[in-house]
Length: 207
Image: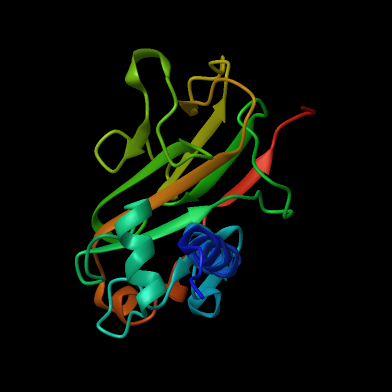
C-alpha cells in the first residue's frame, strides 16, 4: 500500500507552522522587552536623583551591567568613564512635572565644580532641537555668572527680554530633556555623583 507524499507533506506543514509562530512570537517579545529596558533606563536601581536631576552610579564604572552598557551604545549619553565625564539628566522640573518644550523654565544653579561643563536641551527623542542660530547649549565658557557664582537660564520657544538670562531655545510642543555634563569633575564627585549641588528647574507662568 503506497502513501501519497503530498498528504504527509501537508500534515508536516500543519504541525511545524504553529511551532514557527511560537518561536517567532518569543523572539519578538524577547527583543521588544530588551529594547524597552534599554531605552527606558535598564537597571533603574542604579539611578539616583538630586532634585530633578538623575544620574547612574554604574555608568562609566567597571561594574556596569549589560543593560547599562547597552544603553550607552544606544542612547550615547553616557559614553565616557566617570573620571572624565559625569552626566546628569532632567526630564521633570523641581516639582516633578514633566518638561515640555513649549513651556518656559528658569534654571538656576552654581557653576559645577569641573574643568568644563555644559547644559544642553534635547527633544524627547534624544536629538537636538532645530534651534535658531544653533543655540543648543550653555557652557562654562559662555555662561554669565552672578556675584554668587550662579548661572541663570531660561528655556522656551521665545527669547526672553531680560538680558540677565541666557536662553536655550526649545521650539515645538514635545517632551524636553536637559543634560548637564561635567568634564573632569572633582574627585569627590567622581567618587559619589550624588554630591552635586543640583540646579533648580522652575516653570515660569502657565503653559
